[in-house]
Amino acid sequence: MSRRWTPQQFILRRRLRIIACAIIVTLSMILSFVLTARKSVALTVNGETRQVTTYALSVDGLLKQEGIERKTHDLVETSASDRLVNHGTVTVQSAYQTTINLDGQEVPFWTTATSVDQLLGFFESNRRNATKVKVDIKNVYNQLTGGLAINEAGPVTVIADNKTSEAPNGKLPAASILDSKGIVLGREDRVSVEKNGSQTILRVQRVTHGQTTEDIVVPFTNRTVVDDSLEPGQTVIRQQGVSGQQTRTYQTTLVDGVIESSTLIAEKITRQPIDQVTAIGPARQEPKQENTSGPVPPANDTPDKEKTDRKEQDKPKQPGSPTPAPPAPAPAPAPAPAPAPAPAPAPAPAPAPAPAPPAPAPAPAPAPTPTPAPAPAPAPAPAPAPNGRLWHASPAQAQAYAGAVCAQRGWTGKQFDDLVSLWNRESGWRWWAENRSSGAYGIPQALPASKMATFGNNWRDDAAVQIDWGLSYIAGRYGTPSAAWAFFLKKGHY
Image (cartoon, rainbow, N blue to C red):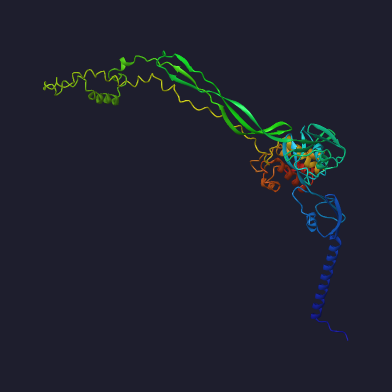
C-alpha cells in the first residue's frame, strides 16, 4: 500500500534537497580552492633559490609566510604581476647602503650590486653627463661594504703611497687585495674604487692631521691731536705708525699630503701695532665778537611775538644797563653814586661771555682727538661646514644618481629616457621644486609631499630620498617609467 502524500513530507524533502546542494557546492568550492590556490613557486633570495609551496595570493603574503622581511630599498621581482601564479618565480635582492662620490659630493646610495665594479657599471649604463663617480668604502672589513668584491670580471689596479701595482684577482674584497699588497690602513685612511675607461682602480688615500700657522698683519690706528703751537691747518706727524702682527694656528687635515680642511684653534698678537700720532694746528677763529658783543635785536623780517617777549624779559636781567635811571632811583640822589652801578658799565662787556658759545665752536680740538680703538682682532676663519646627510644635488647629479638606481632595476635605454622626460616636465629635476597650487614637491612631485618620509626624514632637502621614493612609486603603480610617461601624456599627470 503506497504511502499517502502530505504537505509535511514535501517540505521535509525540499529542505533535504537544499541542504544536499549546499554541501555539494561548498565541497566543490573547497576542492577548487585547494587545487588552484596551492602553488609551487621558485623563491630566490640573494642568489639562493628554493622551491616553496604556498597558498598565499600575493608576493607580500609569500614573503610573510617565509619570514622574509622586505625593507624599503629591497628589490622584489616576479615572473607575473603582483599576484602569485603556480610555477612562478619570485626574486628578492637585499639592498645595503654604500657611499658614492659624485663630483666630490658624498652621497649615501642603496644598492644590490654584488661587486663595486657592477655598482660603477650602473652609473655608466645611463650616464648622460660628464659626472665623476667613485665608490667610497668606509670600512674595508665590514661584511657588507668591505666584503664586496671589487671586480668580478678582471684585475684591479691598486694605487697607494704614490705607488701603482696590479692585483690579478679582482673577485677578492678590498681587505684581501690590500693585505696581499702589504698595505696597512690607518684608522682614518680612505679607500675608494673608481673607473678609468676599462680600468678598475682601488685607491688608498692617507689621512693625517697637523697644525699650521699663519701670520696676519694688524694695521695701526691713526690718532689726531691738537697742538696750539702750530699754525692753523698745519699738520706734523709726531709718531710714525707701525703695523702689528697676529699669528693664527690651524688644526689641519691632509689627504696624501695635500691640505683638505683647516680649523682655527688659536690666535695671538705677537707684535702690538704702534699708533700713528698726527698733530694739527688749532682751527682759525673768525672775528665774530663785534656782531655778538651786545644784545642781538630781533630781525625786522621776523616780527615773532615770542622772540619779542623773550627780548623784553632779558632786558631787566642786565644790571649794568643805564635804562633803570629814570625810575624811582632818581629822587634818591645819595644812593645813586654810592652803589657800584657806576662801574657796572665795566661788566657791560660781560654779555660778551654770553656769546662765548660761538667761540668754542671754531675750536674743533675735542673732535679730532678720538680715543684710539684697540687693534681689531681678525675674525676667525670659519670652520668647514660639516658633511651632513642632506644632499642638494644639481639636475645633472640627480640624473646620474637616478640613472644608477634605474639600472639596478633593469631600466636602461628608452626606459631611462622616458623617466628623464617625465621628471623634466614635472620638476626639471630640481629638488626644491614646489607646486604652489597643489602642494606637490620635489623631483617626483609627490602629493602629498610627506609620503616621501617613508624613505627618509630629510625628504625636503635630500634629492636621493626623493628619487628613491619616486622610482619605488613608479614601480609599484605603473611597473616601468615608460608606462608612467605614457599615462602622463594622456592625463597630464601620473
